[in-house]
Image (cartoon, rainbow, N blue to C red; front, top):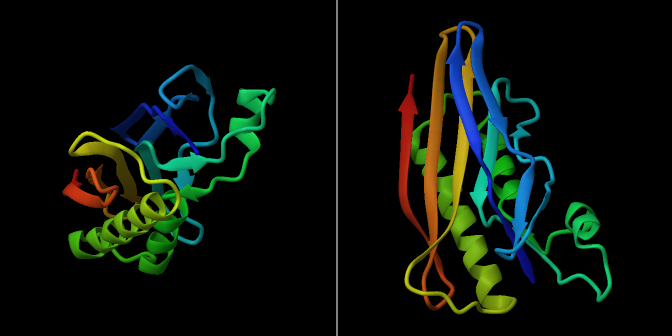
Length: 172
């Protein structure tokens, strides 16, 4: 498996709402930067909500020998990705305000599924503990003019299990 990492996210409140942007590159297995897949994911049916995973949230199969790495990275089907787990959890949550219990449940589910993947696919040798990724969710309510940001950090332990190290929910 190969992993991708490297996301720069900028979020700022403006007079018209919340502006969120992301860079366009990812690093493959800690090596060279390549053009990335889209990093900001809207949640279908849930207005004003965007999620992203920073760090290592997507794992791809190793490309066949001689394959163009950039093209492979952009088109290969992931063997595992946290994005659909987060997206499904947010879609289930719907338009309800983001709250720490429901967001923590999404983070716990992502950690459990990533842990199962790492243990069952090919356990990885990691120093203890190693940050794997951050899950970030931004929501802007145009009626109340309130922006909410959820962030959690997932860490992998030497046995390849993954845990939520910290999480926070902030309103502006």
